[in-house]
Amino acid sequence: MGFTGGVIASFIVWVLGRRLFMQPGGGEFSGLYSHAVFLIPILGLCKIALGIHLQSVRRWKSLGVGLLASVPFGAKILFNVCSWNR
Picture 1 (cartoon, one colour):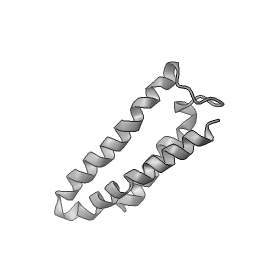
Picture 2: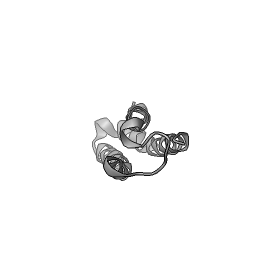
Picture 3: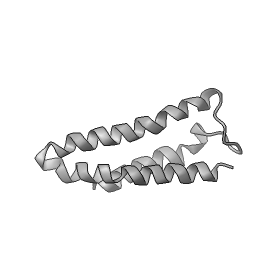
């Protein structure tokens, strides 16, 4: 469940928010789009911090492991979105 939630969160931020964060037809960040650079570490660090915290709670341990496992897949989604932005 944590893995699925983490992948869905990455999908929403990177694929559905692509038009808000990246200029269409270019790969450069400028103006409002420069703030998208801050989302890259923020999303990853929030998922890691929440995953580590959930591992310390016995009831939510599997959710935390799944959330941590979704971090590399979120990075893969980001790299794919960046390669589509030509």
